[in-house]
Length: 469
Image 1 (cartoon, rainbow, N blue to C red):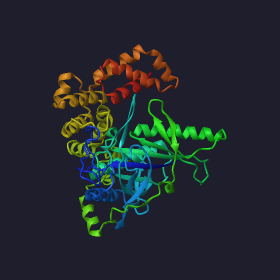
Image 2 (cartoon, rainbow, N blue to C red; image 1 turned 30 degrees about the vertical axis):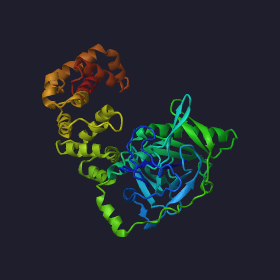
Image 3 (cartoon, rainbow, N blue to C red; image 1 turned 90 degrees about the vertical axis):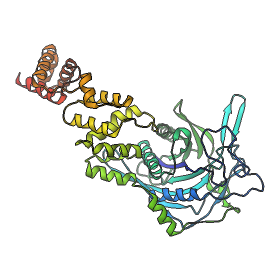
Image 4 (cartoon, rainbow, N blue to C red; image 1 turned 180 degrees about the horizontal axis):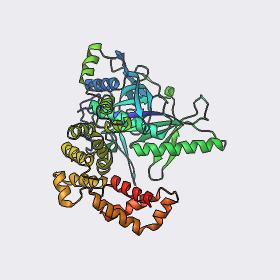
């Protein structure tokens, strides 16, 4: 598969891109619009300067070249949610171009995904479908967007997800957007084609519109790839078209033929002057940008010994990274603190926007107890679950609840002996070379300890006993 992504990110400005209407999410339909954002005759748009600053900030964060002079164009198309029948966007002179993002997979390998351009534009309205017909809400008309267009460098659904997560992290770190995908402030269009291995020519692409969730992107890509391969192998032609992904069925469906750039009849907007960005302004905006994910990632691998993949996952949001840094100074075992964050804490958080209620100091204390052997992984999980509900002293809670790890040799040896006596079949399997049978014996002994035994030492004792016999 060959994939290029077009990602629309709503900018966190107080007002719209060309008028003073507010941009708050969730207002009553058609209460945040005016003659300018609905394109009434005789109205004149005025560009919101903060939109330019935010777009430049994102361009610098993704290694783009910033155009000192760009312009705004009218992109003409006729859909019900676009009342003026054109969108003000940028065509041949975008504000930012030729950038990139680096993604890291679970093996630690890094791949660079090119960014063709980042341009500013206005959002369209929203269609609301009811049993009686379709209604139009113009509140979103004129909400400022940047569109980030990648090169067709992505080769799998997993790479697409990693790229989107990294792009979202850049937007969150720079403060240009809240990127709440459930509210539509970050949406993705997937352009996908297929070709036989070894070929260099690109196949005919389809575009899947407005995917608002990482898992939706993954599922849409996997289905569309399989659909196109099946069609080609059956001798059918792939049609350039726009398709809709249905989350309930996991399938994509044709919506309409896909336009080419010339079909939009772009021309410079006659009501807006060119956008000029001086080098001094670029440097001023650059100074506003905090340390970005890649900078923090490098620090976490060098200073704390995290794997590149773990460091990348922690850097996906500033909240997670800030929490890790604060926890790492409270423990001698920062890698265990990172494992807790990426495992038990994220499992409890579930949704991406859920705040973490656990104080970083407490997270560091749990990591310290794990590192010192005072807790095993099961006890650590129970402690994190308790801390999620309320603040408490981890050591005192572990003692009161009896979840501390037991490393006493006498107790461990007794549980090991009982497990061996009760499971002669597993012991015999081990002696016949089935080494996996040892895990069954460890599990039996762990159960006898109420899950509190030191699993490493317990395993060593059981293996030693099996080898002696």
